[in-house]
Image 1 (tube, rainbow, N blue to C red):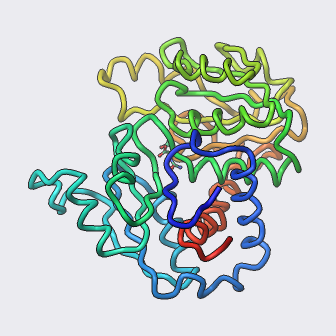
Image 2 (tube, rainbow, N blue to C red):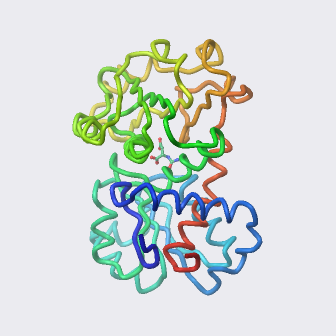
Length: 307
Ligand code: NCD
């Protein structure tokens, strides 16, 4: 796969080889970050965030600054022309002439794909609604690879809001290329969507659905926990019904394999107790820290500053 000038929109655009190339590029940067300190000197990154973010936006900005590039953008569309009624398409046509690469987060599924069709500057999807969050997936994969020294044939549990969690949708698709056994643990109202399950089935993935962690915890190498995506609920009452009952504490992890690792894209809300933070299973803060080398690699690759 040629990366230079290519937008990063969905895991469906990647094969195993191109995923491994990104992870290998990340490792090279991670081993010697200072060697890349001026790789993107003179280049400008625009971060257009129409939805809330802490990690994705700040780690892309930090990654660009660490590569010697410059950053501009907004963290909230209030105060931009979106408020006056400007379309996303028009905003992209403007920003592409102000910058060399654009990270876009938007609530509409397909927004990043549409932007990429318009823009001459590569677009990196920072999350489009409940659809995809590819840069998160690369940092999830990088974290798993570092912890288990392999991606193949792991047993991975996904727990929480599997219906609206875009990080789950992206990661499950990626892991389907690595012979992963998947366990989907969710409240009845928030299962993995049927079309995703069908797609995984077609790719030969072995999976099962569960109502609680106890049914599967002895098997897992990775437990990927997500918060209930409250902002995607049309009806707040539904949120109240599902938010209880999916809670991980140190106690609920008794019986897990000693080297089972917990990942969480963060932010956590009610679903993951702080008493897990000091356990041998917790890997989510290291996971978030991997956002820097992973996003440095993505920026270098799409800008042609790394082969
Ligand atoms: C995730 C997202 O935005 O999808 N956050 C992130 O980028 N780390 C997960 C979430 O918001 O729950």
